[in-house]
Image (cartoon, rainbow, N blue to C red; front, side, top):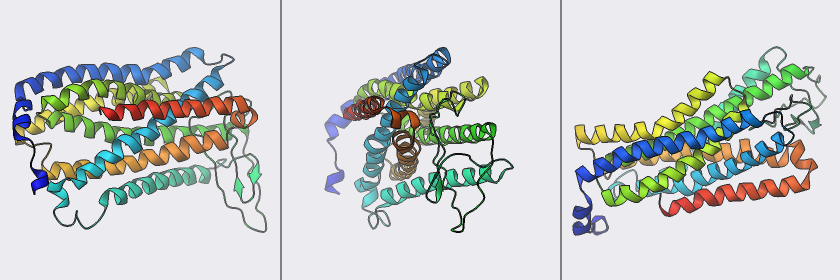
Length: 349
């Protein structure tokens, strides 16, 4: 237990409940404003520039930047925090936490759960009348063209899917859906991905907020507030870019933006209430276990969404990308910039 002993003098000097409460109130306002700015910017820009000549290419670049942000969020921010929580000596010294790498297991469960949701929703849509897909075939799989303005009514999709419809060896009847049903099917998939992505990010945001709200260490809170402000801007841009491409109605778009903006502040308030009512410390073993498991789960969801529904489909199955080598290079640079921007913030948050 020697490793669990902390620097008592520094801990006591930093643990000031009154100063910590003031910093938390400031953080609620700052994080809410930055969250609104981050998630609303791509939504408003997409509505303003929609129909302009460079709209499709610009939104594709925003998508690639967003994919980098989300991938970095899952691998550099969420997953290491989950591992750290479950490897803390207060947790890892007890059964069953010291016997098995639960962080990796729950991360895998999160990724497989996201895949199951994706497959179930896709299967449901394909079972509907007229729900088949037209498009070119690739071996035993049917490829839905994505990002093609002339085929999808000028709307490039945030996460258009590679629909893998297994055909019989003898050959099956080809789907006979019209342009309207294809566009509807692709749009439904975009919306599904945006919603699942928001759920994963909300898990992450609640964990951040509750952890900050329960902390009484002003030395930890002060730099964390500044880092989280930038964190919410970049993460909001990532989610907002996907929401903008999904074509939700105004009310749904506003609701999703609002939920992202208030989740972390609500988590802070919830953490403050939990601490005041129960004295529940952010270093309590039960709090660490909950943080580790939820963090691992949300990390798995975000990893799947970033790699499968954003990066893979944009870079390998997007008509604009495949027909323009210059755009492909610029998109990769945008992806790297998004990853680097979010990764740098890991120095502080």
